[in-house]
Length: 161
Image 1: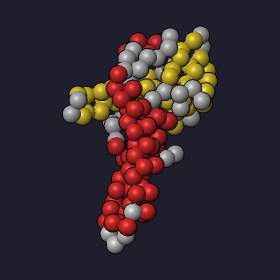
Image 2: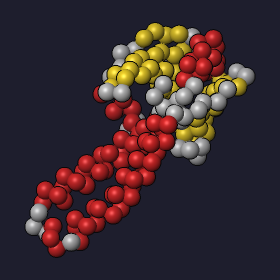
Image 3: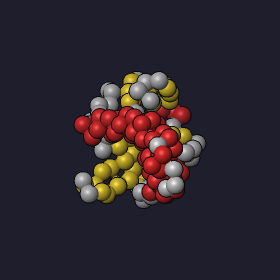
């Protein structure tokens, strides 16, 4: 079984490339245009927001926008559009937990697979169209460790680790 992306995933990917384009086009303008020569606020604020947004989107691409393939007794995880491929045997995975994240668009479930007490794989209802099929397959083959309260602070830390 292979994961399938929701339409929201493709919007996130398009946003990622739009932010890259904006960073390349906008940031040099603030430093090369004589109009902004004496204006410190746009030179600091706009580039900072753009770069933080870019870092956040890279984190989303790395940790959540992944392709998961379940075959036989293993999981194959493709990150960065398949540039990085990782394979895990079910016996290597300690277990799984789930949590809920609430936003304006609704409440979405996240499933975390743990290896050596560390979150290794994140599968989300937001990014994966067939999330519940993947979850059912994982429930059968991997030990359930319980519910985990969703934490934005933990998510932010995991983007950079």
